[in-house]
Image (tube, rainbow, N blue to C red; front, side, top):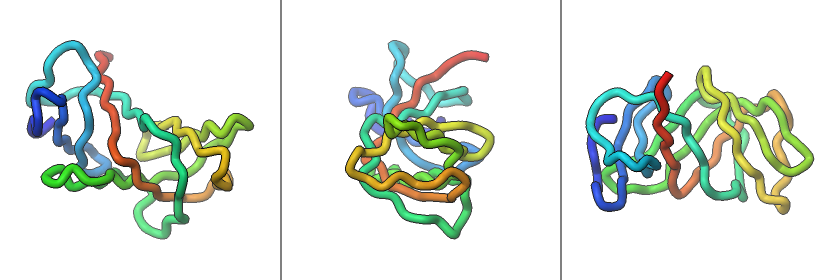
Length: 124
């Protein structure tokens, strides 16, 4: 974590191997600057996505404006209940596709925007 953007709302700016973005800290302990292991959660359904020709492993979001975070990854699986596993870097992110969205095919590289991401810290 690089910076606390808003302590009351628990918004933080972070840098990872995947890029720079911002997120909402989801722990009882107030966030502090320093390194953390986190699970990334996309709290809302994905309603639109696009094929991605660029870097398949990326998170990008302008923390100064707290705009949408763009996620690029490779689809691993798509379940009947619209849950989709997406490989982003060496990690797997579970996302829920809207039932009204045509799901991507496993093996395809996609990108989508989300209004925010949640960060759940954990210890190894």
